[in-house]
Length: 384
Image 1 (tube, helix red, strand yellow):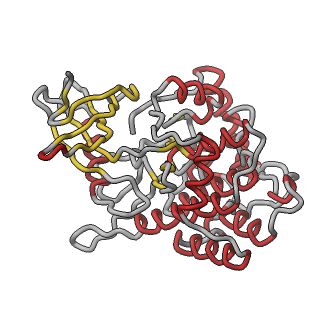
Image 2 (cartoon, rainbow, N blue to C red; image 1 turned 180 degrees about the vertical axis):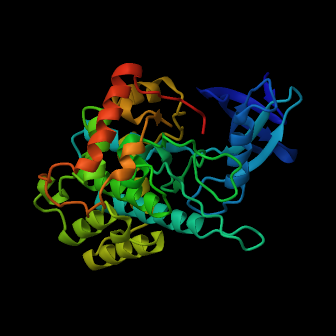
């Protein structure tokens, strides 16, 4: 029987560059038992930068206590010297898995489900964005990886934001190296792609992509290649939801397109504002938000299953291979100096037709294309 600290390992869920992820359990008096997810870090050198990254994540996530954020219970080292992080075990599926299951069946997700998910995650982000350190110093947290695959839905209808592994924070000891894109290509904000300073509004853009995809059942920006995807994002080239569905509510479309504005100043300026607008639209439309419709949809899509597919399970790996541009925790290192010359961005257009790319972006795309051809896209399946 394998143990990690006081936790008994039940199964292996995933492998990545930093270590392993296991399903485990802890036991106590009177038959007490709790299933958890244990993430380990296995390094030989204490000075390995992965140690700092791992402890950064533990410190950050350990400070987050919110109903829509998956909690961390413990951080420690076992008798072999392995670092480990113990997280909540969510019996459910990722929103990406739900979205794909609905698409496979040729069905649309109920609007109350999409709005409940987005309202919940907006609430979680509002909390994280506004969190202060014990001394009152703003932590300036930016998740940087909000996506369908980083939102979990429990079979009970509960919604949780997961994976703060690449989050930006004022207290992190590690800093993103210049020229490195962190996050999933289809959800990066334009300012992330162009290596401009980012703040909480990058998460608002990513959540806007989530809302678009859950309500249209189409990808917002993902194209045939990473290069085209990034270009569409920086140019604000997105098909208006009503082009996919003539009955798409006009009020909801305005919310989606505001969240997807290329210029951060034209987006919602806070996740609170985003959540309020979603709730207001739901009230006007007579749509009831909450766990009940989400749980009912989970039963309809997955039956009465009470298990959760690990992100490293065979089925999840097959799903990830279907859309390689969305594999977890992609990082692309490219020369981005020319991007700094880009002209000021404009709001996301509400049509499929957009003006030609500005000259300031040409050097960036040429450099990126040459990099992809010469070296390939550097994909890291890190356990973040």
